[in-house]
Length: 329
Image 1 (spheres, one colour):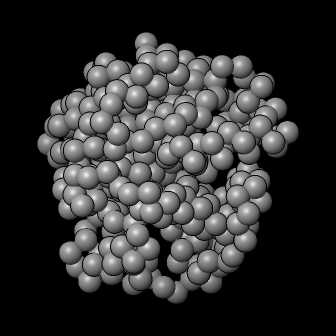
Image 2 (cartoon, rainbow, N blue to C red):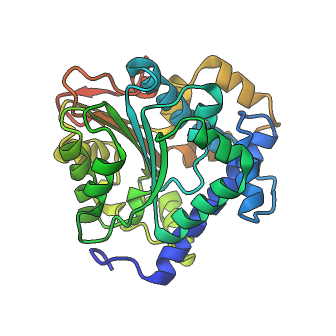
């Protein structure tokens, strides 16, 4: 299967992972781990039944939410609202644009990309829900949701980026458990396209599974495989070092950083965010917590000379690399 485009059945299974993540994030949000009122709008529109996840899962999804939200807010603060682009790969259930728009803190362009069925459903939801539609209409020309299949052997991604973004502006690309579902050559092509289109202006934040060969990793792989979700990209990028090396090889050659999610939570998240999370539920699964969190990587990189990476990855104690040595996690 490696190197081949996913089948229709496999694409449907991957699409389902977006709904699963939505349910899990909504579980954590309802319990007070973080604030995101728009999760429940998409839960309702996607006909998802609210479920209370285990404390281990809730805290993990809190960490995942904080990593992306902190990076996004930091990027906008560094470059100025209205003076940069944000591109969300696999943005079908992404709520970030709507949170930013409600705060009055939008980039010049916010582009979401996803598979055809997911993109169509997202556009319909935005059109149908007045509170979402109003936030799009309040900032004309900023938000767009476009179709993108990273396995397609064409130049659609390049054309979409050029048409939907201002390529003269600094651009942050977000990939939350997306690239790992496609073969390595497809993820590399997508990342290389980004660095080519946004020459010396691209930043990327990647979150995905790593370390597939120990007992926990093997079980993680098997669980996803049983649902039709093969992690086609994990074998080539199974460590933090390999994650950073991929980004450098694809043109993010000015700086790279990668840590596992456990280290990211421990040293990069704010004291306030951790204190809030740790008050939400009784939690005694510390061994399982370490095991789960060390099987996810958070990687950031840039091709911008002198560019500053996500504050999430440059906090004291996080591994960081400049100009190239693949940092460890």
